[in-house]
Image 1: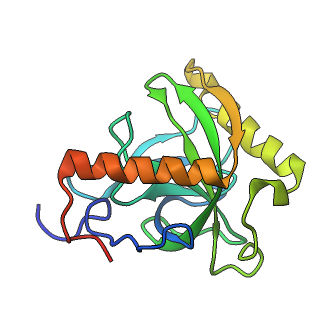
Image 2: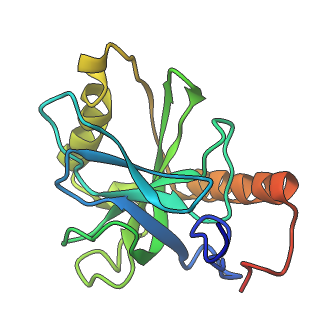
Length: 185
């Protein structure tokens, strides 16, 4: 299948500290676990969450990134509204939740939607209420529990380490797929 692919064909800006594109796979409030079908670029329904939880924020990936689990880098984007799957948002990393699952390291950027006035001025996880971070952590502890899969949370890291993880994932993508002008702004 040829045509546009959200993982490979979305441009990354030069200044990724200011913002980067986030492709939403799962809307805030959903129990449907959509996954990028890497071959086609479409979303496929992976499963309905087994636990009595729902995604606390819009969830997706950063294009042109590659992680040790073979997937693009995951991102949780804080926003007032639920965003439809396959929409692109301008996001800024404010931190990272460091975790491991059955496939190994599975870090997730925590970002804000820079075009949402409620979150546009946030630059660090420390600006969020402590309870909000506990909710995010608890979601990731619980969401695979009834599937008999364990998730280990190593904690939250700040925006500088999140930016390092983002740049490392971009470099890994370039090594894996080749760095070309396609997909770069």
